[in-house]
Image 1: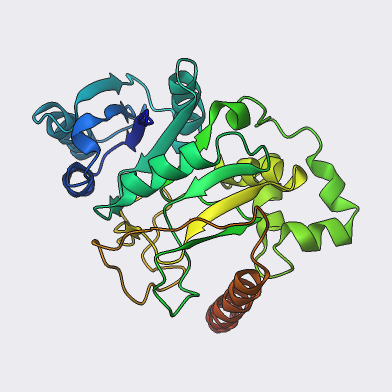
Image 2 (image 1 turned 180 degrees about the vertical axis):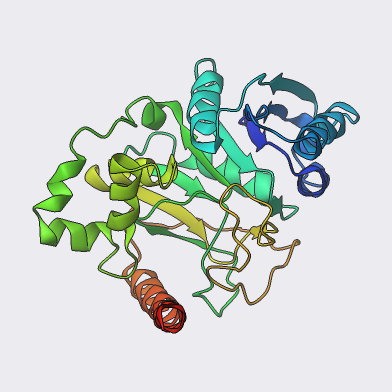
Length: 305
């Protein structure tokens, strides 16, 4: 099995970066993999403290041999996460057929690379499979060491192929169709369970967000592409402390448990969306975000008063 190169994106969180790399290095295939680390540069108005953190990140990635082959790309200027991921993944896929992507606040289970590499090999020729996710939503109570397909992309610990990435148009010139087609919008919002359309329009028409992921989802959605998910998450996000680019300080969806020794042993027999897991996820998203929306409305109402 030819191992996929790993791409890690970092910026100004030295402790997160160190933990992410330490967990990654515990993976069985880590010592045999190629690792590309993209270090984003400082903003034009960066403070001394911010510059210090950026330098600390670079010292961490420099000071230990985290994998078999490592290449560190240090940007002099700040690109932002979206531009960094689009350009970085594109660069790596110029000379490779597949890739595994992580960010600096994602820690991986010991068998994350096993699963990712096996899946990227297994579904290499299946055109309808467009992404492999290491993350999974907490919808399965049973631990079957298996996996399932959904028509929904992810941004937390994922992999894809050159055949997919080369056909993604991040300019999304056709996005305005969502403004006039309610049925399409409903489907894009994963059967109305989460407002992806609002995020997408903010991306395309305002400066409120800068997301590669929502544009990737739009492209995969139009192609009716499938994404493989493990039945239990192999990824844990440690970035819910307000330190990230989007300053999140609470988990969007609480993970009940995380077992770093969990291993995926089985892939789906049929290349199709798992309808049972789809329904479970739709119900979870509707429940979680309806509660959050009600709380947010109450908070806004309080401050207006």
